[in-house]
Length: 311
Ligand code: UD1
Image 1: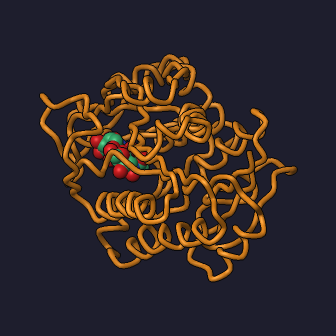
Image 2: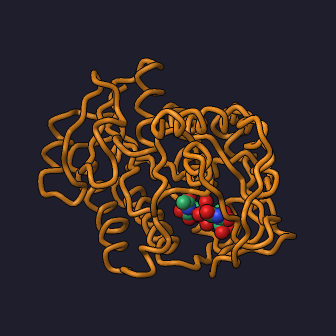
Image 3: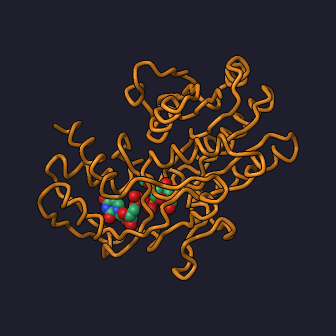
């Protein structure tokens, strides 16, 4: 199967490219290299340097004769979306439409869209783990643009018959995640600890997240590529369905580092949700997928990665 991975040189893309090539797929990355980088990929991986908003996209997709597109290229930061809603919409909504137009023109059979837990917005603790049928009530332009992009895929399916699978990711972590604005708490903590610096917990540390290793996201995407048509045209959460508090996270990182970590505490981040966990039953049943990476092993790999780049 020949697959085009938009955002293929980004954090999740780099895990997906490795997984697809190791598992016999013919995978090509497409990336504008603003957030992603060539170094995220292995030397023999094919990379097309182009933007998903480019007029060249249709020609690129037609020429490549792809069976499927995995659309990861996006504006992924909640804060950026609040500062620049129009930029966020251009990247995430217009970018998705451009990908769908290229897919339509070239008769691509299936498109997989990376979506997010942010599409659900804040939910009550009693509603955890969040199921796919839960209403979508985004609290940020990022959650909104991804939610709208999901609806575009559905409309393209209904109008032109292109199969799709929407994957709503929980909190993804792993090697090659940025530790700046686009980074998650795990990459920020691992980078700080590897460099001998302090970490700060915002709030009481009892907030929870559903942390999933990027390699498990890659296997979930691959399962979506090969899923039967009857499993398509629907959204799946990709998550571990396990809640881990920030205090627990810091304690596991202490085991990995080999010495206890004493975090600093700062004020709660405005707009933060408190508890988060996504149900993964539908993905287990529909895609025959399950997350495999234990948190401690995934954290060890991530810590070693940041140790490697800070040494
Ligand atoms: C994450 C995603 C976001 C997605 C959302 C869906 C990242 C970077 N963001 O946001 O794209 O829409 O999940 O649920 O992956 N924290 C600290 N100290 C730090 C950094 C963070 O205590 O130095 C705390 C935050 O205040 C928060 C928790 O860690 O309570 C998780 O933060 P973060 O990793 O940024 O992820 P989300 O906000 O959950």
